[in-house]
Image 1 (cartoon, rainbow over the protein chains, first blue to last red):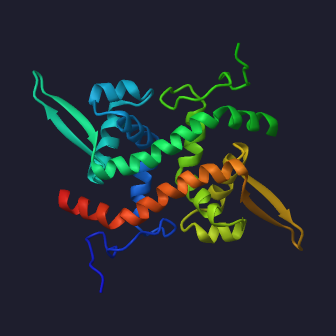
Image 2: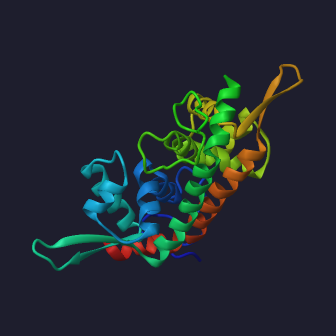
Image 3: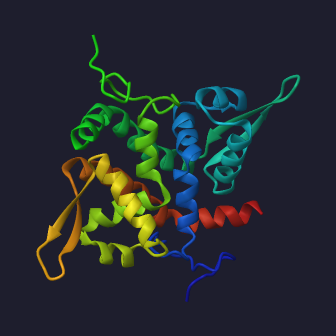
Amino acid sequence: MSIEVSSGWPARAGDVFDPNCPSRGVLEHVTSRWGVLVLAALAERELRFGALHRRIGGVSQKMLAQTLRALAADGFVERTVVPAAPPQVSYRLTDTGEQVAAHVAGLVGWIERQLPRILAAREAAL
Amino acid sequence: MSIEVSSGWPARAGDVFDPNCPSRGVLEHVTSRWGVLVLAALAERELRFGALHRRIGGVSQKMLAQTLRALAADGFVERTVVPAAPPQVSYRLTDTGEQVAAHVAGLVGWIERQLPRILAAREAAL
């Protein structure tokens, strides 16, 4: 007997190779153009919206807000209102978010370190 | 003195937070909807085009070919022609590809295992 959740997917591990598995949607939030960078930025520290916007070069406020909403809905990011005048909103990783962000930051760090080798391979292939 | 490659980026580690850094493009190939799944599938074993197409539910042949070309240009995937009638094309990870795919497979495996908890968090947030 499996417990169903309203996604229609039984309460068991996902299979990203199955196009109907909801893990596909989670993977897409985490690996979206801006999702990766939001997770990598928040892995460094909690940030207010404006600071996050400045940290991630090229993101629009609209796309940043949309990305944060998707990551919050999956339980990876939580928003807290900082009492100030005017009130400010701050974003940080949840415990689950810390885990997924560690994987993302590992991937991002590897790409940054390997970039010279990757660019050299591209040149050689031309 | 830094050695320039034709991308205009000096031969040093990348910075994905900089919109002009070519690491952004590599990150996008690796984390694209189908790039993630191609790397995860090839992390399991070398596959022919048709087998890869069947393994990755929902991908079109056109998108699969385009994804493989991008990953090959970055030096992550190599194609070999299997002598047969008709000749068949097989895809496998390079040494660098094995490294990046290990990060991607770690992320994918984490999401698959955590899916029940993530879906439960989504439900609780409704």
